[in-house]
Length: 187
Image 1 (cartoon, helix red, strand yellow):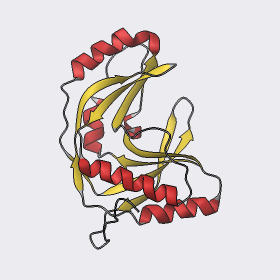
Image 2 (cartoon, rainbow, N blue to C red; image 1 turned 30 degrees about the horizontal axis):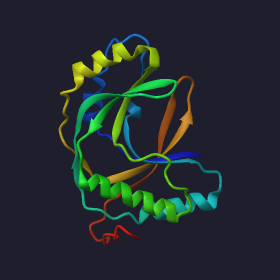
Image 3 (cartoon, one colour; image 1 turned 90 degrees about the vertical axis):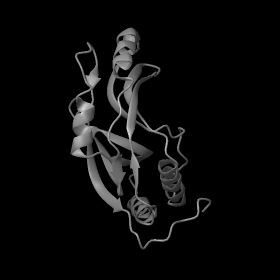
């Protein structure tokens, strides 16, 4: 199973983001049902014991509900392809939750994350030769700002290879529990 932990978006948030797509030639737009905010990519897990440890670790997450807002468009440059993204407003609560996810997954036996956490929503992918077109799209949407989205749970997703896109399937949700004590950040 190819797994990742993310914040799933509400239908209203998905719709608002889908409206930003346009007729940019050569862009492979991400289906709106695949929009998410990745907290931690886990990777391929084949060992049932490790899967159980991941599930147990995520069930122990403890945080206070908070809101996230999406703001601004950007181009994330890659080696062979670039991504059109929507940024996330800086939030100490989001950073704390992501740090906690990283910590519990490492304790469950997952290797450290390979990339630094840079919260965003990916809307599409395009060839690096289309950066001029992408820059115009970014300029058109750089003032985008969403309504705040409440965060009450995190989702463990499995990434399945589809015909021409990945399909993300929610495997488990880990909800905020008001009676769960908050974990110290250094644990």
